[in-house]
Image 1: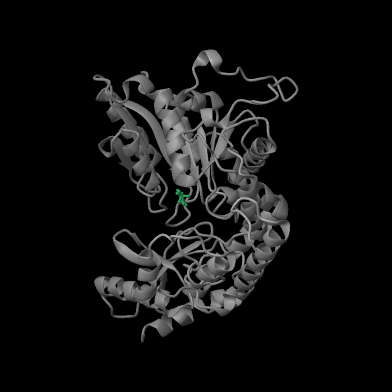
Image 2: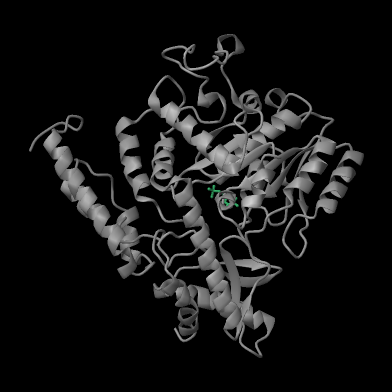
Length: 484
Ligand SMILES: *Cc1c(COP(=O)(O)O)cnc(C)c1O
């Protein structure tokens, strides 16, 4: 069949599309039968990275054959029922389809009077409500928690530096802007602090107690010292669910200090935000609204395919002031509502509230997956992940020769195999070896972390397909890995 690149006949779109759907269905339903992960052999790597750009186009079927032999042959394991590494979750099926529909429509969500914009606003309102944030808060979708952190801290820097950062950068001779975070905060905040020109030398790492929550007295002490030195304490990053252990900072206490000193409070709920839908964490829901900004990663515990992050701010104007580059004289004043807005330009543009101009239709997958689950379905999925992590913790606690790291939170369990008589450094080396053997073995995929200088295996269950049997098989698989 001959047709141009742009004018595919309807029958051909269907024929190729059905083949894509067949492959997706096969992949998703047969995942449990295949290894979680297999390392890509060197020859295959070379073939994937060293093939020249095609001189002439290939047929759709040849392209799909290639996809099956490469991307679908060598996945990293996300979505597999026995993948519990990092904070990578199972993609919801409606989110998979959403990406195709979003690409077909291909809108730029910079702004304008078109449906994609309202779907994004709707999704943001749903998430806001889920997190207990008032409707007066604003926000936007971004690529993930890192971009949410950068966006929020950019707004904080602009709002709290005490001079016009957009004009002067941080070259103001008499002011040093400082930002605080705990030792357990995600590293993306340091990246953001460096990128924003604040500099990691002006990032105060506040120690945590044995519960791995930021010490609030130590935070206040650091603020006092900085004020005495003439520095400007601008923002503090707190965690609602740390990556290492699922710890939750005492947000109300930190907020009280922030109020005293006029410090911007950022809450990183990238992983843990959806936990407020569970019985165990529901009481924390009210604390998020004490923040000035909140980060949430729908591509984690809300099962939206990667990438999908969200940032919320108490004062939407703070984002606009930090990012808008439309000259004020043509900046549309916010219309009172949909009935009075400009029929082409619509409501104020998202591109004025963040760094990106052309923006993808990320909202569609968030919206479709929220509709697939409903808040109740999300709550059940979150509860189930927590229950599976509890189950794993119970297995670890009752097995001899395993150490469970406590306290643990949310859906994470950190632990190590510690046979009697082994020294601490032997245990570290042994667990590193076991982790690699486990990952290469193809049965399970965990990640590792270092806490208090000790190496731990780490299981983070944001997995909608894991079963009790999968969880119960993990420790035996680790023991079996001793001999591989
Ligand atoms: C994943 C994560 C981040 C970083 O977000 P990305 O989506 O990876 O950019 C920040 N904080 C926490 C707690 C996270 O789990």
